[in-house]
Every structure is written in C-alpha cells, then in structure tokens.
Image 1: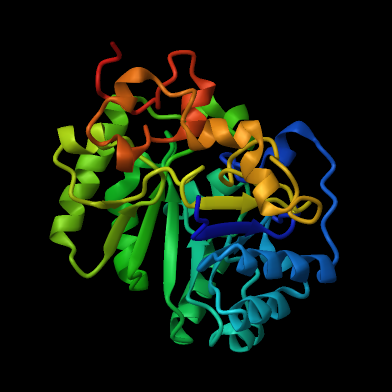
Image 2: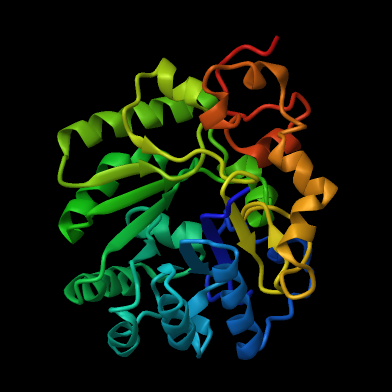
Length: 327
C-alpha cells in the first residue's frame, strides 16, 4: 500500500456543532488529548517519510490551533501539497497572508443558503463564512466549497448553485454523510434514500453540463454501478481506505479514513510497517467484509465497493447507495 494522500486532523476542538460531523470523539465523549507543537511536527515528518504527496489538514477546526500557519509552512517546506479544510469562520487576512504561498487550496464548508447552512452547522455563521470566502478569493488562493448532502439541503440545489455563481466559486465538492460521529447520531434525520440520492446526482449532472465554469465533484465515494446506471459524468472519488489514503486523528492514531471510529496503531508509537501488518488493516486492504457481488464486479478494482465504512455498518455488507442486486 502506497499512501499518496493523508488527512491529518490536527485538533479536536471546534466552534461549530454540525449535525453531520464525522468526528467520532464528539459522539462518544472520548477525551481527545491534542498533541504538542513538537509532536505535530514529528507527525508531519513521518507523513513525508511515508512517501505521501498530498496532505489535507483538518480538525475539529484547524484554525483554533494558534500555530497552524507554522505547521502549514513546515509541511509545505517538506514538499507536501497542503490543502486546508476549514469551516471558514475564523479565516483572517493576517493568517492568509502568512500561508498563501504554502497552500495548494482551501476548502470551506458552505452547506447551503443562509437558513440551511446555519441550521446544519447549529451556528449563525453564514454571513461570516461568505465574507471570508470573498477574502480568500481576493488573495488568489485556490478555493473550494463543500456541501454535505442531507435531507435538509438536497432539495435546494438550484438555489445553492446560484450562490456559487454569485461567489464565483471554481470548485464545489458534494459529500455524503457517514455513519460516524454526529452523522451516526443524526442518521434518521439526515440520511437521504437511494432514490433521492439518484435524483440528486442526476440533477447535479445536468447542472454541471449547463455550468462549465464551475467544477462539480462528488467528493465522497459513490458506487460506480449507481453512476453508470444514471449515466453520470461528474468527477467522483472512490474509497481510498486501505488503497492510497490514511487519516491521522488528534492523538496521532492512524485511521483508514477520516470517518473511521477506531485507530489502528499510532504514528508516534508504531512504525508504518507494523500498522500495515495489523490484522484490522489487512481486512480493510483486502475488503474482507465486502459482499461477493461487489468483489466480482468489473468496476471493483477502481470502485472498491463504494464507502467501506457503510459496508461494515450494514448487515448485508454493501454500500447503501449500491444499485447492483446482491446475489
């Protein structure tokens, strides 16, 4: 396994309380001790030693770390392509001026039009986030937004696209919710059914065809059988867990993906070879839990069965958005 992409969740604190937040420590009340600055530097050095190319820094809310700009500069100086995931509320011109030459991009969570964004994040942050998006754009930093697809916002896609046009957003990611953290706690309230998801991606595909100046992406892994059935031409992700992606939580624990509830080794205590040899990691790499229909599919080498966390959570061992019949 070659780890091309790493998501480093550098802290556990956050000033938002998003209904879909995947951070498991917010759901199970597990105390999360954040590392010292020197330990975080050691983590970054180890990420480089893994041969990784792309580093995404997230949290919690990473801008609550008062040494974030130093961490970004160090990671960039190591030769990593650094992307920052933030809720956008704490961005300042001073911070952006410190890091603008060290970042590949910034992704800001913008969950819909004003009322919906504030409802989903349980804040009154919309105006501040929109203003800060404009500041990021003014600095010439590549900016992406993220929209988490839920029952509360999926019917407002067209209004959201008008907002994207007004803000001159170049790239927008659409992410499904995951059965982790608050997403798991609020599953019934937020999760859209497979037919609703199909209608959403079909509508998104139509909008993308009509709006070539914005790049629309399905950032969360979606089974390729669903995309093929609906003739979806959008750029999309497949599940990187156990393939080319790892995540690191605020304790330094290795996770197969950012949504994973339990660590598999710790980067400050275990070397990478030990972590890869862990029996839990081998099950993930080999997709041991996945249903036989997905494993025999001609898309399997790329698709990997959609979201592996969904596979493990479901008794029939399939992604909830899989449309191929289970044999």
